Length: 413
Image 1 (tube, helix red, strand yellow):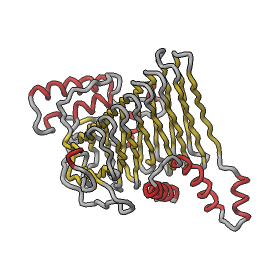
Image 2: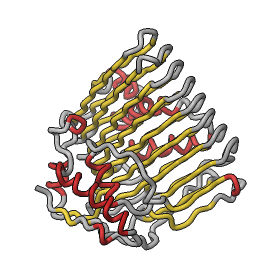
Image 3: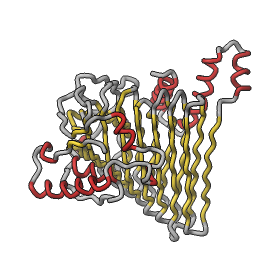
Image 4: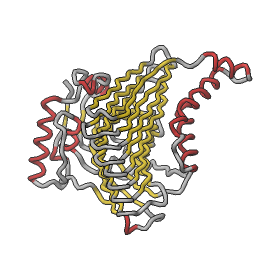
């Protein structure tokens, strides 16, 4: 059994009422503890076992002093929110009409529906601190991307960070949001994040998740999204440097003509372990979802994809597509896939598939006959395999930046 040192009293400025509510969630978490492979959603990622191997004790006592290690992206102009251990340190929206953007610390007292079967969501609600709330006013389209810089202090050994974020786009608004982590700490720590995304009619959110350096972080992020009529949500995942990373995305297509796309390009090295779990709920007619998940597995790494498309009886004319592909470069690497369809409507177009295999030796040989070394030939093929997921990125500066991120990950940086 994992040794926990969780104490709600360590969280500052809580009312007595809030302490009582948090204590109830913490007690519910204690009933099950961190999930193991006996929990269906965690059958490929035995979190309890992983944490027992890597942590002697886990505490929620953290400080929020600004990180001194901070390097801004120079490839394109952008707005930013700068977080240390999940808490807002500074923001800058100089490229925008600031009256159209509301940014503040997350109100931890906001009532949210908690899935009692999700132990990490319960723990998050019990211990959450920091985090942000972002709202874009009606019909405002941000001129430049917004980068959320996730920085971390160096004193996080055996610590857990619990943060909540809220993103609300009102009718007709548009935002490109880059969730960017660049941290190379060697301390074992856990980051447990819950994001709530609300897109009103005809809103557009492009959400890009980037982990730009290797570290010993154990990350879990749960994204819950609600989409209204004509709204569009695009998610790109380029996160390959963490010891452990599980991203769980649940999107509810609640009104006609809303759409969701999820793309992933991951190059996993050493003993890195990454899982992407998605559930797309088609709750209304004439909605679309598209998922393309690509993994390259090197060394002793492990990649997992669990994806479910759920179609309600009312959701006629659904168009849903799901595909995962894996290149397994090493005999010691592992890829697990669990695609699912659950359909109650009869006028739908739904498909899913999953493939895994090794790099084409004929293609490697062909490149070598053109004077390219075997090592570089393999990198070229991996790059071509992963870069396909960036085809839909329309901002050329951003696309070039993302291609550079992928190239660095392929080169092991």
